[in-house]
Length: 260
Image 1: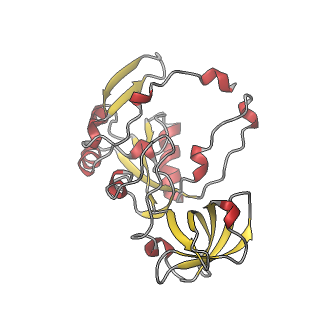
Image 2: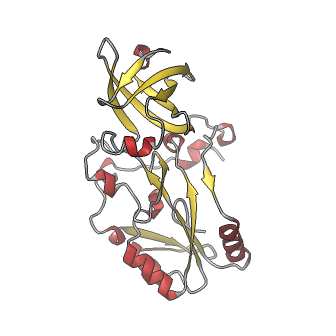
């Protein structure tokens, strides 16, 4: 496959800046894998598509407030620190991206509040740094009220307080993603409950979405595109249920990427 095979025109006006208020009334395109026919429905119509015994896979990863804005010690220069992944929870060491990178060197301390700051302990890439926070423990909780929701680069607006709810699935449980598992954003508790009552098997997994999900593909030969690694958890029970559905030719809907 080539990158040019995927060229298409997407009018800017079709890129939503805000989610639809009624999640399950968003558009849903249904593709029949055998006939290749397509249907255009609303997301809530998924209750008429999935049947008893089908498997619904939901990614319970939760988007955390990964964008921090602070001031560098002494100079008070404004620095953005984007939290990517936790490297060592016991020592509060994180892999981050900083901006502007030219102002951030090893040994610099960046203060976010009176009781939260970090020290740069290593360089990783041109913009990447490894930092150590002064607070040992749950950094996710520490940044909950001072961090900002990371929005995709194609949403051309600043993050707003309501994005903490908008840009989150209703079943999110485990902190770790810097981007939402977007295919699952349209589920509501009522919709999931209706599917359960119908006999659809709901299987939870965890896949922490990383910043690489927004990395542009810049090579024509897609086999040469380098993918970022991401952390995931899947229990033996979940794997057994998914494999049973796949090999038994049941439908599976993954609440983070695709309908298969």
